[in-house]
Length: 158
Image 1: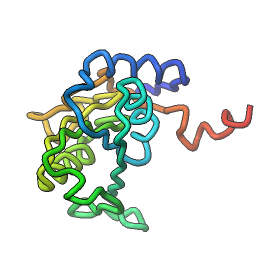
Image 2: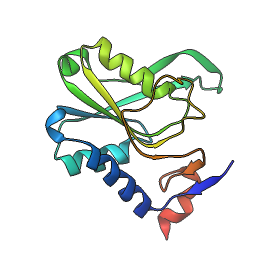
Image 3: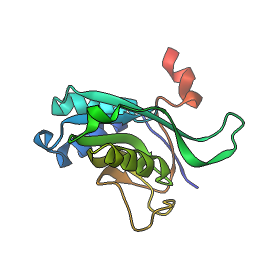
Image 4: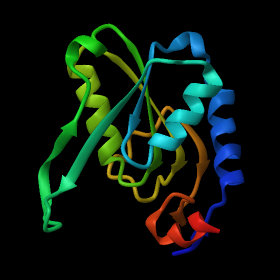
């Protein structure tokens, strides 16, 4: 599998591609998926001047890296905050798609109207062949290393 090591300029370019596909009048809230979606969520919300930004933390593995049958939401906005809201869910990547689908379903259960935007979409890895993000910056099959990934921590001090 190819490995793509991204720089901050790549992130701003991809966020710009997302923003060009979005109309800020279509959304009431940005829901950034932790942790990878926090930076893209901030960039998109800033560019669209959307000040209502929330976070969702979800995991599919236990502390010993055992796969969980159902997603475990560590943190999620209360239903009252999402009811009737047009929610733009932002994450870094749709790989298997499990995280995005789980967050989207949880927003729907709360009565929100979700749309999913990611920097990278990996259709060949998706567990949902009939589904996809509503918006994406780039389609790839490469292993993506974002500037905020822990293996890049040496770059943070330079």
